[in-house]
Image (cartoon, rainbow, N blue to C red; front, side, top):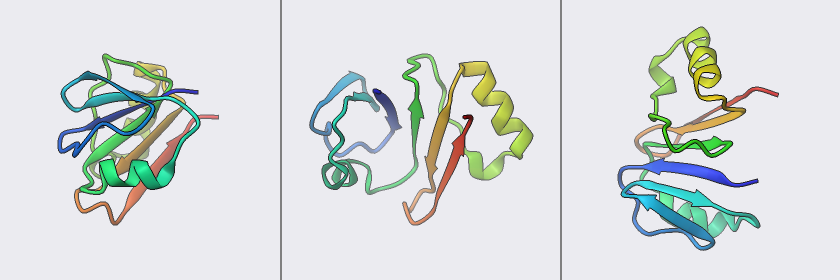
Length: 96
């Protein structure tokens, strides 16, 4: 399953990824998490599934659970991983 990474401070395009536009890449499996970490280590990014190019990244740290569910439904997402600006804390939201 491909993933879409939305990251304003993307250091470089990760391996097996295709840049759609500045700050947006689609990552194809198999995933090399050590290589991905090099690309998103600054934080302040969203990783979503399935790939939706019209998605507008959201700061789930400032949203209520119901607002996050609503955003996921609006975009047809099953997964949002949101990294805080320092990449120390992540929030994972899954709609199974």
